Image 1 (cartoon, helix red, strand yellow):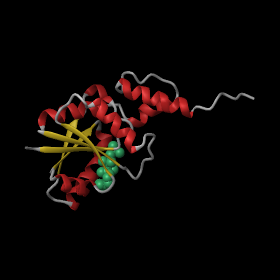
Image 2 (image 1 turned 60 degrees about the vertical axis):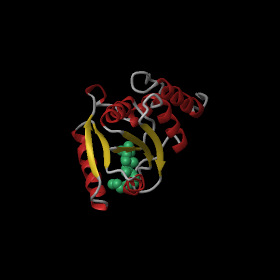
Image 3 (image 1 turned 30 degrees about the vertical axis):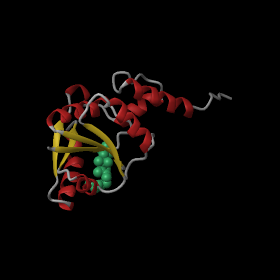
Image 4 (image 1 turned 120 degrees about the horizontal axis):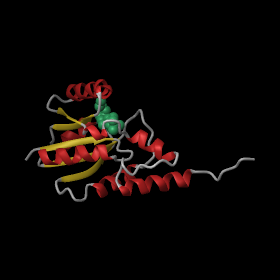
Length: 167
Ligand code: PNS
């Protein structure tokens, strides 16, 4: 049984992430999607909210499990006895950062391999940050995320929008 782990911030999960999840779930026997913390990002959604959204959008994929880990990815890999990290690559601009992380993870544990899946063309421009920016200013994210995610984004930004004050 070959297990793979797809780590990320998923703040929130986009159709680009979902595309990678669907394709990786076809290749591996079991895929753990793991919500992790990225020290350079502050998040809109709590860990619990991000997990709930991921669970909702992956509920029809039987070999996918969603979980969370607060520490190093390699420690999660060891606890899961998994060797393969899946990462999505959108563009050359992703490469340097991903390359650094892959090498760091291999330095920390040389039993771990990072495999990159090229994003679907249709999602090559898509990121959680851009989705949040569009949603924050009232743009449509219907093509970018699943309906449940769009609804949660709307709820977040409606709650955060102060009533207009032009005085
Ligand atoms: O979706 P992101 O923010 O690009 O994902 C990055 C993430 C969360 C996978 C990465 O920051 C990570 O692995 N964080 C956990 C801490 C860790 O293991 N750091 C060392 C790897 S370089």
